[in-house]
Length: 479
Image (cartoon, rainbow, N blue to C red; front, side, top):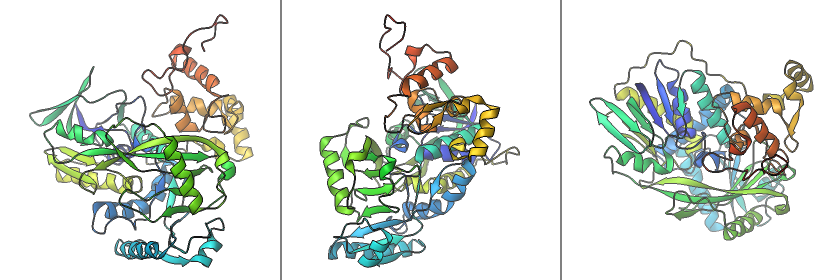
């Protein structure tokens, strides 16, 4: 019997699990995929929004601003890269200027610090590559960037190090209330818990319906992205937004915390909650709009593209409530969900208190975790010391990103443990460079096979049937 079951191992479920691991509770995180951070968390804009966009008085506004302020300390404790690079909402005409003035006033009401409007000369001095057609911009110095899957992996790993359990490949098929407890079923297993927290993203409405709550629906909003090589990473230093519409904040141009340049997303509502396909039309839209925002966008430096699905709730705001005794919904967490995530976690802890959960402090709780990128970020002297202690750190596996066998081994054996190629990618950045795993992929597969004691041809890209080796050649190697 668990005290708490959290359904969904994205950034929201992960930070809630970490917040609850401060207390003497038996916690279980349930995830339908082969790894954590596999839903909206792994494919979004990676922006910590300042908080000027959300409607004043809404949960989005309150939790965005609070979460944004909490994020630097959370990232410091978890060893996650965070960069306070600031953001700009650019305008081209009088209509855009009116929208920017509205955002300024809204941001002031939301208590966002440091907001101001920049005119063209000030803006060009700050960002020389901004389009000459831009006339003004809203400057938000508290805007920032973070890696969402780094944050999630670290938060869940920290929760597990403090006693929480993680069950992957546990797709919830039913929930039954028995006396004061819940039993949660998958196809092959079940667990019992006193409290259930529904963080199931796109499927949170379906989980809610399992306990008789039909008060909201969630649909998918598809967003396509283009990622450019690190050679393009210095084109801009701030996150560049267009003035927002009802469909979102438009095509942005932003550096990433790892030095790449990100363009996107598109914004298209769809019915299929699994359709993550990219489209020619989507790429054309991204490229056209990015070039309107910033001059000399080097599209030829593209190294990959991807699509993410946002969970858009039917209420227009975050859905965080308790429709049934000891059952909490955390649903419709679209943008600015990443920015708000630390504050959402705190909000849910308080909601659990109101539901009668007794919170006794975990005397062994440790909020800190060593960075997954400790070797990459180390000095030459520190690296040499690490190599001396563990020679695996002296063997480069991913030449594009400079990732070593030691880092890959750590990803396999450290909570939450990587079990497939994409799991290694998200934890170490191996396979994220120019060749996209073309050279290092087979070597990483061999390491996974050896460390997990699994046949080479059973290693997958992201779990399930995503096998990458089809048959054995006459030379004895799987292909």
